Image 1 (spheres, one colour):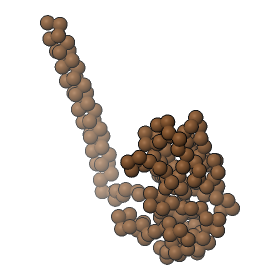
Image 2 (cartoon, rainbow, N blue to C red):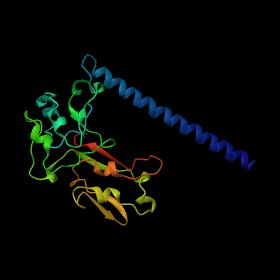
Image 3 (tube, rainbow, N blue to C red):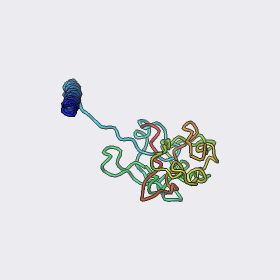
Image 4 (tube, rainbow, N blue to C red):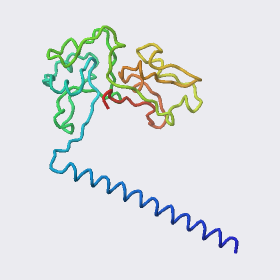
Length: 204
């Protein structure tokens, strides 16, 4: 009898939880529908933000000034930059980079900026002034967070322990100092292909 009572109570709790979940989903769906109706008749665009070359001005200004000439892409000695594919709509053809393939190596001459003639890329006095993006550690994938001795991301950071520091044996990213070059992501050593660092555009 006692077991039957526990079963009935657990069953009621399960059903109650299910109803609460469905009610929540229905509410969210209704809210989304109202928002869609309110925006009916207006052009709805999904903004896709990219990792831009060093010295890039704000995204809105960048897409206005960039004439897709490829000069910065050709000037990059590491062949890091490439043209955004067609999937990026009006941004297609503009320069970008993907740290998973190749990061910005932050060359001392900043050839890409020097090559830009439209003002889409602005020269800086120091690499620390660059703001391409921000790196983020995925602790669940990080070897150091599992207790292993790994500091590849720290050693390869171009800002010499300023953007990534070691704290209690683990890497810690100082967002205010990170320039988003992606070198830490590129050099990250993981198990079974797990990515422990991702670099997000500054304007995401």
